[in-house]
Each structure stands twice: as structure tokens, then as C-alpha cells.
Image (cartoon, rainbow, N blue to C red; front, side, top):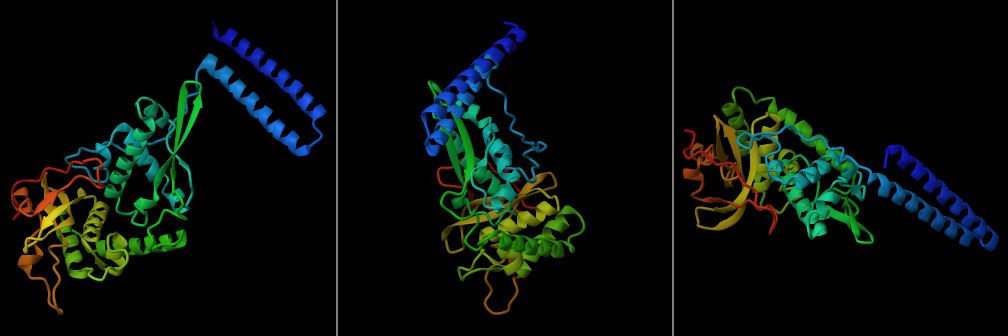
Length: 368
């Protein structure tokens, strides 16, 4: 059938629907003097008429194509990736979700609920047997990659960000819509922040501290890496009091008291600003007493290879006002696998039973 004939058929069917709609409305008006019943009937008839019109159009032209409106970042080589290392390991579905989260940071700050995820996730879901479960898993993978790549969003609470699904069934056809939601929570923030104003204030403090610190960063990449490492060791202390914000960059740059994750996230955050490739790494570390514990450190890219740095273990707790000995201060600075893998074992899972991300392959030997 030609496009001209299709247009004629659509016009005829829509006209017919309008006539039927008018007849039904006349019947409703004549047979209902109750305003509330009339309003309900009007809404029902309007909805039926609109659905019918849409069905007629879809049967002839097919479903309208809805664009995702996503801007994908330039592809980075994983061997030199800087700000999107974990993003690049996601599926195409996961990448779309990741970028949508990043695009909606202001909406998350505003506490908006049911933030739409890309319409094409409908097709992604329908291409899998358990579509809803598939998208939920990809959402978790995307979130894990996002929070590992982006230390700057320290105020978001992973436990408060969830995926919401809406399923519409017409006969044998099932369509999906997916959204970012906050569940029963008032906002998406960690408990240390109650509202957007507090978050904005904290972000401003972090930005100010970052600029002041990096004024002293100069020279080649080795010198800049050493400068950031030394600043953390010399100015930050390991938190032993269960204080607030001990796992993020605010606790490190503003309060100057954190645990290992806070050290590692801040080291990456500062190197990101200096445009030096750096990734956050987590796993199990064994201390000098043989005690194993969950731990976080970094890999940095220098001289065409990756090396490990553990600013936490280069900054041990010193009793009194003593300073860290030079031999200890650089014990875990720019180390290769021959040294680092003796007591640091990586785990690519950010969450239990989550996606197993890959880490860069370390150089074998240390930088002396």
C-alpha cells in the first residue's frame, strides 16, 4: 500500500473514531447528571479514543522511534584510560545507564524521583528472556562502574539509588520503561548530608581544597604523582574514631581524616585533575602481622606502564608527633607486581555477586 493510501486510511479511521467519540459523549451527557460520574466517563472515553488512534497509527506505520539522547564519550584505550576505565568494560546497555546517571547528577541532587532511563532499554529488555532482571543487573553493573570511576560524587549513597520498572502488556506484547528512583528515602545522599544546600557547600569546600593543593603540583608526571602522594601522607591521618566521611574525598580534603578508601579515592580525584591516568583498586591486603583485611589502593599509568601506589600503607599511624620514616613513606610507591602482589590481592567485584571488573596489568618491576 502506498504512503498516500496509508495517509487516507489513517484519516478515515481517525475521523470514524472522532464521530464515535462524539456519539458516546452525547449519550453520557444525556444519561448522567452526576458531575463526578460525568468526569470519570469523560476521562475513560478520552483515554480509549487516544489509545485507539495510537494503535491505528502503529499498525500502519509501526511504533515511533524514540531517541535516547545520550552523548557517548570518546573511547579511551584501556591501557591508558583516565576517567572512564570501568565504564568501558560495561555492555552497551550498561554504558547507556552509566551515562544517564552522570547526565542526571543535578536531578539526583534535587531529589527527583523516577528519572527516566533510555527508552532503548525496552528493546534491550525484550531481547532477553528475563528482561526486567537483565536490566536490573545491568543497572547495578553501571552503578558499580560509575562510583568507582567518579570519586567526585562522594555525597551519593549507593543504597538509596535504585531502579524502578514499569511494565505495560497489550495482548502478547510486553513493553518496559525504566527509571532511577530513591525508594522510600527522602534523598539520594549519604547520611552525613541532609539536603542539597549541605551538598553544594561540601562540594565547594572540596573544590577549594583541590585548587589550593594542586597549586604546588609541577614538573613531569612522576613529579606530580610524587607530590600528590606526599601531600596525602604528610597532611592526612588514618581515622581510628569512626568519624563521618571517612571513605570519601570530603573527609580527606576537608577533615583530613579517612580510612583506606578515602585515601585511594582522593589520590585518584587529584590525579584526574592533573590528567594522569589512575584507577581505584580494591581487594584483600595482608599486613606485617599476617592479618587480612579489605583494602583500597591505586594503579597509575607512567612511562607506558601501570604501577601500584598505596598511600594508606605509606602513612602508618605514628605515636606522638613523629614523622613517617623515608623508608616507610615510599614502601608502596610506584610498585610493580613482583612487590605489590606479595601482600595485595585484587578483587574486581565492587558489590557482592556483582560484575567482575578487570584491572590494568601491572609492570613486573618497581620504578626505582
